[in-house]
Length: 97
Image (cartoon, rainbow, N blue to C red; front, top):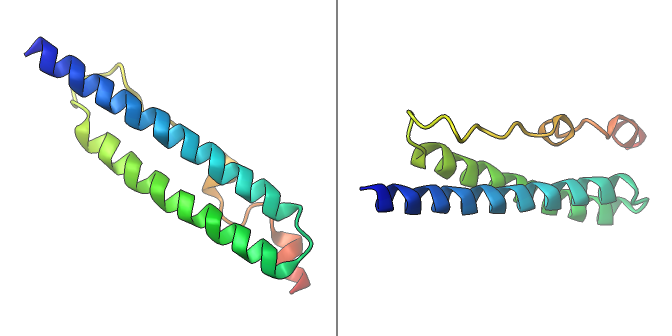
């Protein structure tokens, strides 16, 4: 049983690592979009960021369901406030449209 539990923890750990990388990638695209003057290119970049956001949400759901509720060693990673707020950095962009 112990061996199976270790494998499960390793699997969850790998999912957390992937999720973290995808969050970083999404943040990268959001930052890039903020600096892109071309509207069409900005929209394309925002769609890529949204894609990574969906991947992160799906992976986080898998992580949450695979954790043992009694296991307190894994805590849900709090998303960066900037990443959680889809339109957080775009009030100027929206008002310019």
